[in-house]
Amino acid sequence: MDLHSDREDLFQEITLQAWKAYGNFRGDAKFSTWLYRVALNTAITFFRKEKKKPETYLSDSLPEQADIIDNREEEQVKAMYAAIGDLSKIDKAIVMLYLEDYSYQEIGEMMGITANNVAVKMSRIKTKLKEETQKQLATN
Image (tube, rainbow, N blue to C red):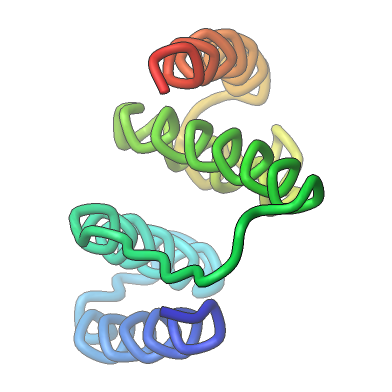
């Protein structure tokens, strides 16, 4: 699987889900906030499905030093995503919004909590992710 086709598939799925859900848009929040929530939930579902599929790699040459470094970084990224996948829905949403460079104030407005609560949750989430990532790397 390549990253480009995965992005296209995800975009199509988000578009479809937004189209289906548009009739349920009540106007309680800004349209952009509502659409973001639809996209976020669709992306989480999409990546859960992808996570369940086995990955296969074909290689006909021995790894060189650069490949070893790339594999280590790839393992770290996989461990981090696995740790994110184990978070609660709310914590995942907060992390995804944080990774999209939303401020704590904006995240709080979208999630219906205060900016201070977001800051506390992010601090706890970061600690949890660091611990879980290290555990996963130690077991691999």
